[in-house]
Image (cartoon, rainbow, N blue to C red):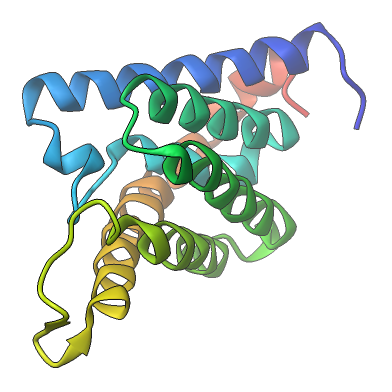
Length: 176
């Protein structure tokens, strides 16, 4: 990977979009949808676009997550492991980009496992939730939310950006 001004600009754009979408979602819908036990981060749809935009987008969604988790400080675990989950998810999507829908599904798994694996510490529900130990219930909840954002909304965005008119315009501006 070559780091040039286009890569830095693209990474910065993804970082800014990730932060702005989270802030707008918090303002319009409320905090629990972004940082609660049942979170549906709309900004995670950007992770799917890594299949098209490459490594700069991986960096952008990772740094964007770091910035939003640092600003809306839930705890040290969230600041450290949230961005790691995004990094793993985005890297998997990039590696599996030839099979984009499968990549989006697989990419949502690390977010559910990693974020769900620690998020229950901040929102302690009863020991068992509908017969599942609380940590597994939280992982399942976050994975389903991530699946909606990444494989649902994100894959739809990916299909839109792959249209000949749009991809042609992006390539004419330097997209590889």
